[in-house]
Length: 235
Image 1 (cartoon, rainbow, N blue to C red):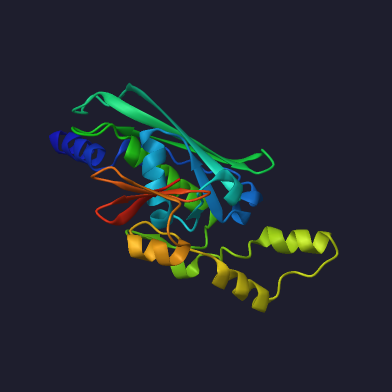
Image 2 (spheres, rainbow, N blue to C red; image 1 turned 45 degrees about the vertical axis):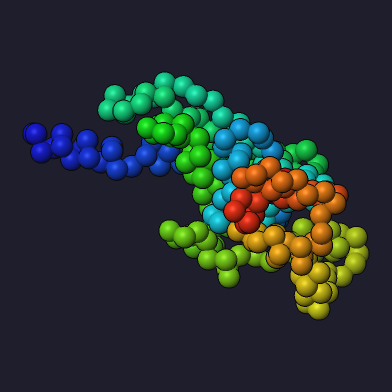
């Protein structure tokens, strides 16, 4: 009997509470038309999601809602953990909604994570929400320890909605050549890029703000934040 209790306790300690919050649900097919996402929110969960979107999903981060196919808004709240063995009884509940430009909510998800000794758990919960979104939007793409297989992610430049809208209007879907040209013209911004790489892709910023430990490049429609000379946030 003692061994049984021991295995139960070890199991609870090894798996975070957020691992048990996933539920099967019907996914709105419009989620799979989304390629670029603007993350809305000024909380810890939103900040973590911006850092990890391109690492853990096939989506690309947009600098503003006007540049995105949809907006992913994060909210978080703190509550008391239900786990009697948690060192810290506080926990974070993180929720997110994906809204199209038409104002329709096409996806929602949430995750709960107990706070650690030095963190609130909101960052881990936000990452788990991204895992859920990735699984619902791109079920055909394998996701491992280092994130999804990027080579299997759908192209950003020609989402299925474009072909459907063209067909509905009586026009032809974009050709492979036009899609390739659009891809070539796309300026890709990724976390970890250096200031030199950003300047080559976007040119010199309209305003450069040096705050010591971080530097801000302000362009017409976005602000890029650097730490130690590398991109850490785009908004």
